[in-house]
Length: 405
Image (cartoon, rainbow, N blue to C red; front, top):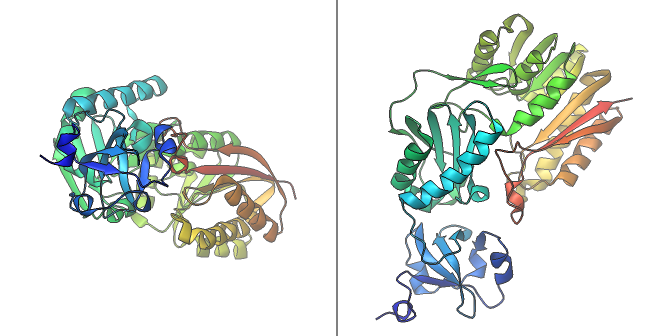
């Protein structure tokens, strides 16, 4: 009989080091870092994604975790009950809770259904596009239990198609290979139209960026649309027309979408056509920094400029370089804003908190020869809930400046 079996555990046991902060785990923090866990031979022998009982240094159980010794996040809390069974019924209970929240918020079934740790499913992201769900299993345990997750997803939500989007930085950190596949139903025939903020967006679920559309900016799109009535709009890092289409739906006289991806801009154009706004929409492909410099040299002016770049600081080692990039964006964009106009700057960087991003943006505006006042601060929409104990679950920041000088 093993030591774990002698103490009544049918599962492997992993234990916090004496100096590790068990109180944080008890109060809801969902992660254990590699330097906080005793990594003896048995722990090292666990397969990535294995389930284990987590104990504190006094051998008191804290809950059921998934373990991946290849990851800096060596354990993720799954359930406070150490004996919980991770099966289809377990997934169904969590998915039902997540679905109830989203169904109250949105009249149409287009939203983020599962936001990883915040919805009790660490490392799992699920975006819903009508009767299609796109699953990102970004942790080893999710990959190992994918069949049960998909079965529960089909049963609870009623989707006809489930796509696995196994791409992105997070999977690499977990030692997982990239893979894109339809794992239930049939692949959609072409982009899917998504109604949002009075516009129609076109989402390429099989070949687009991330899951095909960024639902997290929905509320910030809506605020920008309120500023856009009668305005000339510039949307930089536009992807499939995010801010541009919302602005046109809000009454903008024109919108110029800028992105490095020709495919994304083509989808933005299709969205403008589907929304009946094609005559007011234009696109320019190119590197955003270069396009901003070119527009400045041309003396271009806009009443509303939005810059929504990718994560310049996805992790702490990239923070300083990332903040310099955000500052440069603000410096180049500010001179393009007409007197009394608005500049909206966004960051989806985990490592750059709101204050650091705000300071970098303000410095850039000043270096661009302008002065501004912040009139709105936005975050991800309510289908991207924040786990209070996990700062990383609150990643998106949006600052709207009115330039007064």
